Image 1 (cartoon, helix red, strand yellow):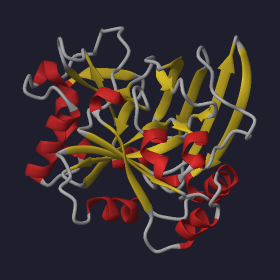
Image 2 (cartoon, rainbow, N blue to C red):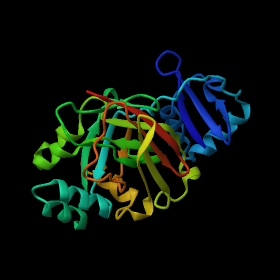
Image 3 (cartoon, rainbow, N blue to C red):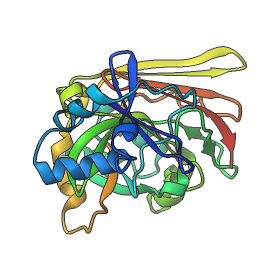
Length: 285
């Protein structure tokens, strides 16, 4: 099943979709107002996400709201880099120290870095940001692993927006290239592991439109990733006090040409098989 966050802060609702119909689980269990609440129940009962939710779906009314879902709640968002060959090649092309990215691509230890706090994260229909002091800004569509206390409980779509010229100027500028207002988008839902199946065999695509015209289109498969989700999660959680709810982005292999940069007013659409579509406009921050 797919789990959506509706109502945001005013009237938070956990909504489950089984096929085309969405069901209001909060109407059945008022204390079940978020996917995090469901994940706690999974931890206590030692059952699968869908196994816990299915009896509630059977009793739940259809969700009648028309609001856009909000981003899945994550206390922290982290990300992994250089996990696809094309990403390694792109990072080499932007950097004055290209050999370091090849070293990471081939190394035992992956690149894992902090990406966003909740206040820097947006959801479907909300604007992602590009830095006003950067000249080369790009979206990075990625499979997001949803974690509860460091354990995988689902998957989502992520956009690790990045300023490639800032990072390329010096690798030590990575935090400035990655962490800023509206630097990350998540959504539209959390898909259960049972729904996704093999996370290393999912089609992924991205299109970018500008003034009503498509200016970029690309597609790939998570099967091109050289590391597994489990491996990346293992390194993220090693010697690290992870929060109750977190998302780990797993890297991108859809990279626009070097001449391309995002502009205010663009729209970015990312789709991952088995999860859904995350579409966001672009603003300058």
